[in-house]
Amino acid sequence: MNVQVVADPAGKLLWISPALPGRTHDLTAARTHRIIRICERQGVPVLADRAYIGAGSWVTTPIRRRPHQDLTATQRTINRALSAARAPVEQSVARLKS
Image 1 (cartoon, rainbow, N blue to C red):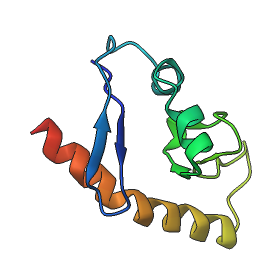
Image 2 (image 1 turned 135 degrees about the horizontal axis):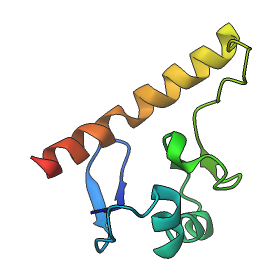
Image 3 (image 1 turned 180 degrees about the horizontal axis):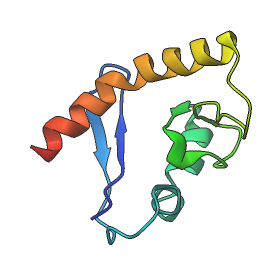
Protein backbone atom coordinates (compact mmCIF):
# COMPACT_ATOMS: atom_id res chain seq x y z
CA MET A 1 0.00 0.00 0.00
CA ASN A 2 1.32 3.46 -0.92
CA VAL A 3 0.14 6.32 1.25
CA GLN A 4 1.50 9.84 0.84
CA VAL A 5 1.66 12.27 3.75
CA VAL A 6 2.07 16.00 4.12
CA ALA A 7 3.54 17.11 7.42
CA ASP A 8 4.76 20.34 8.94
CA PRO A 9 8.45 20.82 9.89
CA ALA A 10 7.76 19.49 13.40
CA GLY A 11 6.38 16.26 11.96
CA LYS A 12 2.70 16.98 12.64
CA LEU A 13 0.70 15.14 10.00
CA LEU A 14 -1.42 17.60 8.04
CA TRP A 15 -2.83 15.32 5.35
CA ILE A 16 -2.81 11.61 4.52
CA SER A 17 -3.69 10.44 1.03
CA PRO A 18 -6.05 7.66 0.06
CA ALA A 19 -4.14 4.41 -0.37
CA LEU A 20 -2.81 3.32 -3.73
CA PRO A 21 -1.46 -0.15 -4.57
CA GLY A 22 1.95 -0.83 -3.02
CA ARG A 23 3.57 -1.21 -6.42
CA THR A 24 2.82 2.47 -7.16
CA HIS A 25 6.03 4.50 -7.22
CA ASP A 26 6.14 7.34 -4.69
CA LEU A 27 6.54 10.02 -7.35
CA THR A 28 3.61 8.61 -9.34
CA ALA A 29 1.49 8.62 -6.17
CA ALA A 30 2.45 12.24 -5.41
CA ARG A 31 1.51 13.25 -8.95
CA THR A 32 -1.75 11.28 -8.79
CA HIS A 33 -2.77 13.17 -5.66
CA ARG A 34 -1.38 16.46 -7.08
CA ILE A 35 0.61 17.04 -3.90
CA ILE A 36 3.52 18.81 -5.57
CA ARG A 37 1.30 21.06 -7.67
CA ILE A 38 -0.82 22.07 -4.68
CA CYS A 39 2.21 22.76 -2.49
CA GLU A 40 3.76 24.87 -5.23
CA ARG A 41 0.57 26.91 -5.66
CA GLN A 42 0.39 27.47 -1.92
CA GLY A 43 4.09 28.38 -1.67
CA VAL A 44 4.87 25.40 0.55
CA PRO A 45 8.34 23.95 -0.12
CA VAL A 46 8.58 20.19 -0.52
CA LEU A 47 11.44 18.25 1.08
CA ALA A 48 11.54 14.67 -0.14
CA ASP A 49 13.69 11.55 -0.35
CA ARG A 50 15.42 10.08 -3.41
CA ALA A 51 12.19 8.55 -4.70
CA TYR A 52 11.11 12.05 -5.75
CA ILE A 53 14.18 12.92 -7.83
CA GLY A 54 12.89 14.42 -11.05
CA ALA A 55 9.72 15.81 -9.47
CA GLY A 56 10.59 19.36 -10.47
CA SER A 57 12.31 22.41 -9.13
CA TRP A 58 9.83 22.88 -6.28
CA VAL A 59 10.91 19.60 -4.67
CA THR A 60 14.21 19.42 -2.80
CA THR A 61 15.74 15.95 -2.88
CA PRO A 62 19.15 14.60 -1.89
CA ILE A 63 21.99 15.10 -4.33
CA ARG A 64 22.66 11.84 -6.11
CA ARG A 65 26.18 10.56 -6.51
CA ARG A 66 27.18 10.17 -10.14
CA PRO A 67 28.79 6.92 -11.28
CA HIS A 68 32.46 6.72 -10.35
CA GLN A 69 32.36 10.07 -8.53
CA ASP A 70 32.06 10.80 -4.85
CA LEU A 71 29.96 13.63 -3.52
CA THR A 72 31.87 16.72 -2.49
CA ALA A 73 32.01 17.72 1.16
CA THR A 74 29.49 20.48 0.41
CA GLN A 75 27.09 18.03 -1.28
CA ARG A 76 27.35 15.64 1.68
CA THR A 77 26.61 18.53 4.04
CA ILE A 78 23.55 19.50 1.98
CA ASN A 79 22.28 15.90 2.05
CA ARG A 80 22.79 15.69 5.84
CA ALA A 81 20.92 18.97 6.36
CA LEU A 82 18.03 17.73 4.22
CA SER A 83 17.97 14.47 6.16
CA ALA A 84 17.91 16.34 9.47
CA ALA A 85 15.06 18.57 8.28
CA ARG A 86 13.05 15.52 7.19
CA ALA A 87 13.71 13.45 10.36
CA PRO A 88 10.64 14.64 12.35
CA VAL A 89 8.40 13.79 9.40
CA GLU A 90 9.97 10.34 9.04
CA GLN A 91 9.41 9.75 12.77
CA SER A 92 5.74 10.70 12.39
CA VAL A 93 5.37 8.30 9.48
CA ALA A 94 6.98 5.55 11.58
CA ARG A 95 4.49 6.22 14.39
CA LEU A 96 1.66 6.10 11.88
CA LYS A 97 2.83 2.67 10.67
CA SER A 98 3.10 1.20 14.17
